[in-house]
Amino acid sequence: MHFILKYSLTASAIGLLVSGCVTKPAASDEEVRKLHASADTFGYNNRAPTTSPAVLPDAPGWHDVLHAAFLANGDLEASFREWAMAVHRIDQAGTWPTSNLELGFDYMFSSERMKQFDRTTVSAGLMDPTALPSKTYAAAEIAWHDAQAAGERFRAAKFDLQMRVVQAWADYSLQAERVRIQDQNLNLLKLVSDTAASRVRAGGPQQEQLRADVELRLAENELATARASLTQQRATLNAILRREPNAALAPPTNMPEPRALSATDDQLLSAGISNNAELVALGYDAQSRSAAIERARMEYFPEINLSAAFTGSIAQSIGASIVLPTQLPRIRAMVAESREDLKRVQATAAQLKADRAGRFVVALLAMRDAERRGALFTEQIIPLAERTVELARRGYSAGTGSYLELIDAQRTLLDVRLMSAEARTMRERMLAELEALAGMDVETLSGPAMQEATTQPTEKMP
Image (cartoon, rainbow, N blue to C red):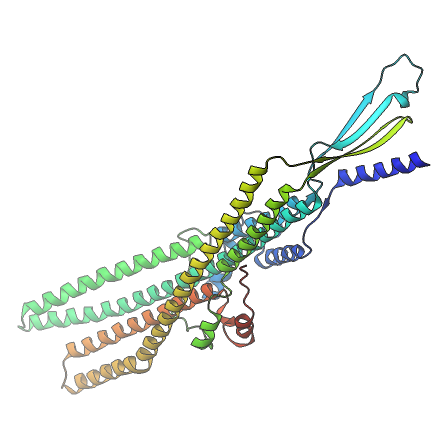
């Protein structure tokens, strides 16, 4: 009975060594859940990396373009795959035992009369010493924090792509508005040129027609340049969407309405960069480096080597050996290196936080200034310019004003419209940058979500 029990324990131990197990923090399963949720959101489940290019409606808006970019952009998907790789490394680091199982078979040749079974020796043991479960758990904890950092870097890539798309679409819309305004300006200059030609035929000075012709040719050149720039910006947007450079992408027929932002400056500054994905990733990096220090210290702990064998019905055995560390200078250097790595991450995070905070304030001030200028043009300057055109038209109809004065008033109105469009575009560009820096969408930058973000920052920095 004693030997049977011993053999049973040996078989169980061998089964455990062959199958292995994973020792890791229970909270690491949450990272797996987040990974799968993101895969569902961005369509990364069960698809090859080289998917079809984005498909857009005939008259897309910025929402359509952004959604297509999320589904098709290769850089974003590459960042997701890096996150997935880091998540898979958690189980790799947490697998115990850390050494493969070696099976042995020996058969003894002897003149003694023995059963064949008793001549047979079967052994099983670890090929190399295996780390203690605590060491394996510590390695899995490091891998878990690295996976969390990779997840935040994916979120940073998402916000970076969102900023690039929103800003590129705003520039594309502005350039389309420039083309429309330049086209209207060209038509006005054609009328001026025709009027100057009529005056020359009536005996007027020829210099007036020459000056009008020069302005007309310059306007034609500016219109051609504006159209070329529009084509270039379309190619840039198509590249982000992983489409052919010349693929059709209709710009908006009018300047898009500005996105709503109900949050005050105090709310925005309170949220600040506490949720910034890059900073949160560095926080997880710091936690990983702290865990790496503890893991390096565990190298002072011994390792074990298990073995089991039986020789027929004659002998059964279970053995274990302890491997003591002797490379003490190497272990001390590993601990010191991990400490320096932690300080490096902390220094990087401190500087990045200062840089991002500065950028946030600059972007906020620039956005508010653009809003001010946009409101000034919309509420005051454009109505005044329109009133000037109306008065010039009345004066021309009544014979008290010249035709050139009317044309000049109309060109002024076009210039004012362009400056208004530029202010609105700057506002959208800065708002997109604020989203990326704050780590939240503009719809989240107000209300309960804003309150939660300001009271429970997600940045994790020891």
